[in-house]
Length: 205
Image (cartoon, rainbow, N blue to C red; front, side):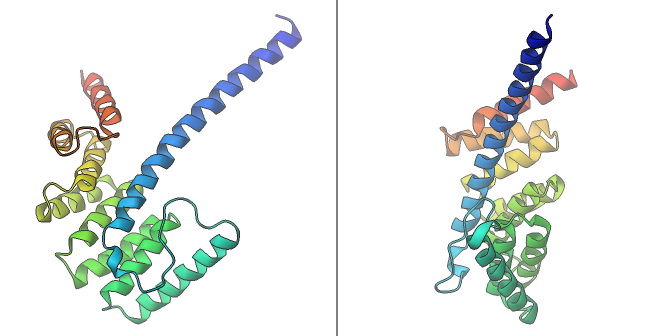
């Protein structure tokens, strides 16, 4: 192989790796955006009037990012100064989640949960934040607690499927996937859930 051919081969391999990385990154971003959308839909009434909209993705870059950080700092101050204010804890949690500080978001959600232990939105959001923080056992726990309040809530069942698969809990994951298919037959996460389940099963053989 000539020097030029070798160089082209190396470039081709690198391009393949980059394309694969971008594809995986795109899937991850889509999943994160979906979960962030679920968070902002659930419990959105607790945001204060004229509050900037809460959306998924990296909000910390540029002028908008500075505004977001300022909002987070203000929300944190409000939450610290009013530890028994449920809405203050929830707002701080949402903003922390939005800038992908999941563990900090969980702290505020736990504080909100102490104030209102049976609030469905807080339970579901604890599932979402723990899933994104890769605390899969905790995510299972909170998703299941939320489903005790609303057994057929689609985003929560979807999240529980993801947590169970991440933990390798084949039997229960299959049950929840069947439930999800009944609630939302065209759910776009089902194909990848089924692929993941098949991979786990084949790895156990």
